[in-house]
Length: 420
Image: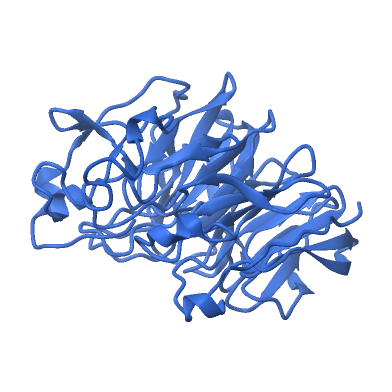
């Protein structure tokens, strides 16, 4: 078993699996709209990406979308205290810093798949695949690297033998200075992840001056990780693939295409999101589905008798997205123009082998009365009618200028989205 050591520094829908040859489009369920905390806004309209290619995008009326910077492999984002944008690039092993004109230069290099970025005052936290680092930030430079959480599992871990499907980590800092880090599952179904030290398929928390411990479990791949305005911890989860239809225990494309939903959940200490024994169920009956306040049901493949975990005792998922949406970066925003107001933005990467594929998008979830409302599409159009894609959003954040900045790792750019 590996230990985790901590030293605090000073200072509308998207996917994965499909099997079989059925025509999924002919069995598309009817989605129900929840009025809970929803925002009434005009329908999206087609526009062109300024400085981009010929493919159109859909955005709110009067909004403009432009290529602000070219950043190959752009993943997660964070704004510095002096209003510069940081971009992580796991494949390049670096974090870039961009000025007001979108010009970039390396901030830190030679890292092991850096992904998550978070600030606590002038302290920058970077989540590598095997540890979390802290740096002192000032004037577009960092210094004083410290490893604040180490011995995290990745593909280099001896006990995993090079097999790790979700090595990238995300990081967030709570209002009390606690560090939260996402630890993805080894694979689609790897039950042993729930018993390892440190626990995989979990969110770890390191309180100031204390070692990292499991905060929430059963989180297959909680890449979306963010702190809400009240200090609550939220995660957007990439859920499992190829679940069997409980009516006949068969893995059917028409069922897999829409099950299970991808949870968007508020985490509390000890919360369990069920993986791999329980799945959040979008079915309302009569072909209708919903992603709001959905209960968990047993997985007939991994928990056939319900003796592995009592799914009925799990708290329902507050919100969610269509199965295989592949939500990645998550960020809370305020006073978004066009009537959106306060809420959370989630980069939806799109399914990798669903048929038909779920398209990538940037989703908005309204923040009202201390919780998030249902998914609403803010930007879409990254996928063509034939299912091919010209872009895949990863994360969207609000800039100091009030505009929205979106990373796209397929197009290799940062978009700037502005309202009229």
